[in-house]
Structure formats: C-alpha cells, structure tokens
Length: 174
Image (cartoon, rainbow, N blue to C red; front, side):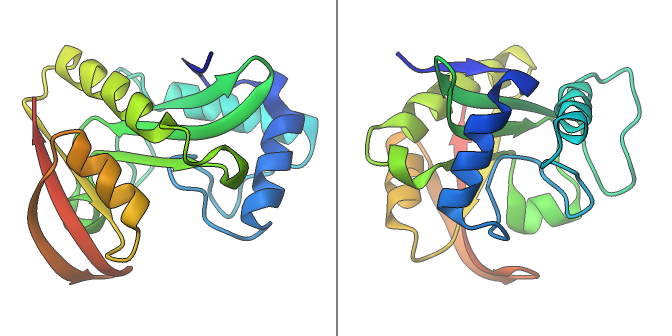
C-alpha cells in the first residue's frame, strides 16, 4: 500500500534506482533536486533530504527564488515510487509555469493511479494550509498528467508559452 512520507535517507538506494529509470540528468518533477545537490553520496543525500524537509517550515527563510514548499515521497515500504510537492504560495515563475503542486512518478510505477491518489492527498494538505485554490501546470503533450489534473478537479485556464516552454495551466478550487 503506497503512502506519502517525508524525504528520508533510508530510501537512498531506491531513489537512485528511480533516477536511473528517468535518466541520470533528467528532471524529476516534484523532487526538489537542484543541479548543485549531491544526491549520490550517503552524506550528501542525507543533507539534501534534511534541506527538503526544512523548506516546509514557514518560520525559516528560504533561498532567493524559492518559496516555502512541503515535499513528500510516494513510497511502498522501502521502494521510492515518486514525489509530490506543495508550494505554499507562488512567485512570478510559479504563477506562469510551475504552479502550486508538482509531481512525478518513476517510469516503472506509472499507470497505477499513484499520481491521482497523491494529488488528492496533497489537496487536503493545501486546505489545511488555508489555500482556497491551487494552480497545476503540465506540458501540452503529457496526456497522463492532463488526465490526472482533470480528474482531480482541474479547470483549464489557458495554454501559454513560458520560460520553460508551453504549459497547460489548471486551477483546482478547494
């Protein structure tokens, strides 16, 4: 049975296996990984997961260009299946292209309904934070994500060109 867990060093091996499925240099939506993060060494991975957990603490400042974000990993036992994050508010880039919620499911775990299940769980968390609606975006050709967002209540606002390419932009009222 899958569950949402906070990022943890205990899933290091499985996380590395998932990254290999995506491709070493591929973007892993919802994971919060930056180009400067050392995720290969156990110590670097532990520091990275600690930093991810800290981004959700609104009493602590975040780096320039970041917003307070809560990260969860989708796991089944000791197996990392994917990630989902909830950005507590939007900056200009997130309003245009990134949205409040990002998620990614490792290739071998797709088509199991995990993204929809995780999205429903995080929408509940968004309500607890006092949010009344959230923005989600996806690439125009990502039919799996389009279905997930629309099944989750997403209403298409527009499709626009952004700094990172064209994006479909959906709002979900909470």
